[in-house]
Image 1 (cartoon, rainbow, N blue to C red):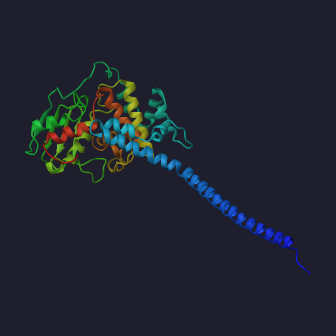
Image 2: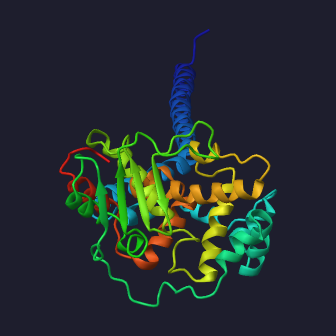
Image 3: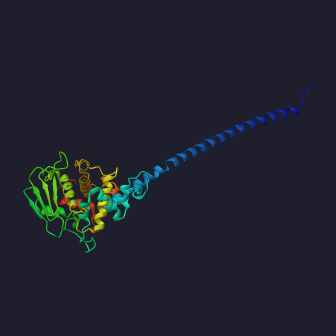
Length: 351
């Protein structure tokens, strides 16, 4: 029996066709696998980008903030600080949160009458009655455009460390309105420390402010060219005492109460500026006096930081001092003020 050649050719053709189909299928499958792999890879990459988007945005925002801060730091550190602050910190000031201290809410947002009522409970009637006496001038009675201290400040020194001229130039590094009519005398005392504190166990007095005499007294351990940082911080603290709700005659009654209320709200807050000095104040058996002292010293401490290390303050503390300064000295620049104080003593010491 002879084979049909055509049948044989057909069989070979079918075998070849099947082989070609298998090859094509393998190629198609490989291409499909490659496409799936690429798709999955792209999807995972997209997922990663999505999950990191907020982080990248935060980093970008921070980098932009740092760039802004660096670019303007030399000319106006005050505005730079505000510009770089995280918006969430600002928003937090007006955000209602569960479990908030009702006293803090009244102090922050209450009307003057509500604040006065609460402050009377915390500080006593006598303390508040002094604040609401009539006759205080307003901030805006006169236009203030201070470039330098144009009223004489009497400098009494038993030290050879700092001259009167240097000290007067140094004072130009503070807002002029914080000195005019508030600080007319500065005395350097050779005593190592001032009188012991009656409310701070083991505390050593480095400086004192006498409101009636408009006098600051700085003690020997602070007056040292080798430690101008300490000197600057102590002086700033004492100057602030002449510019609080009790001593600043430029304030109206409402402004006195508002400033005190803002500071009191911070003293009561868990996220307050932690000053070892303020935290250690203790008056046994007299919570009203203790709270009054804490408020007074808290103000002086955050003012000290404002003039020296504003970055150490939260926005909530920074803005209290900043708003107070800008009412009478809107052009005051923290960084320029620091440079003025350093230059006054002809030293390269970094304050």
